[in-house]
Length: 207
Image (cartoon, one colour):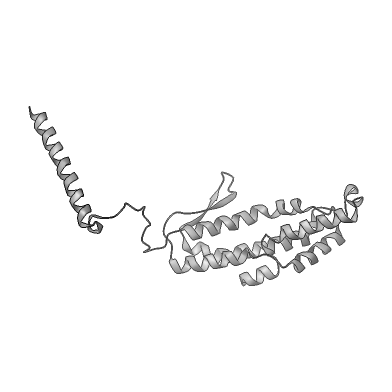
């Protein structure tokens, strides 16, 4: 089966296919690897060496694209579908309209900060594992781990050195060539004093 493009997997809201599409870009870099627990559960990503610069930049762009949020209209449509297939708990059903409206707004606003495919997939399939209409925190808890994995991958890619890149080093101050004539004279005088002290110490040790 031909692998789907990232754009397509986001449109159809299929997180599994999205992750497979992303693998096409980060895995060939070789020095980007997943961090796992003893039970082989992926908890993040790390770089273990330099990577191809062009490949890294392309992978960064794709991961960023996978983190794009859904439009509020799309979230609303998916949430309406969820409500049509689930029921409110007894406590939620007795809430006032104002309270329900606040919960609804919190749901839409909260999910607008998460990747489109994760949000829409979770809302559209909620009824398959629960009969109850969730609150925003329950949906976010469901998608938080996967969203965190993408953030970890993005951070890893952005910080990975690329082949041929000059390593960043901490500034060690100005070199002697950058000094003014007065600073060079002062530096030479200090150096002469240090050498004289070392010479005196050496002569004292010979005694």
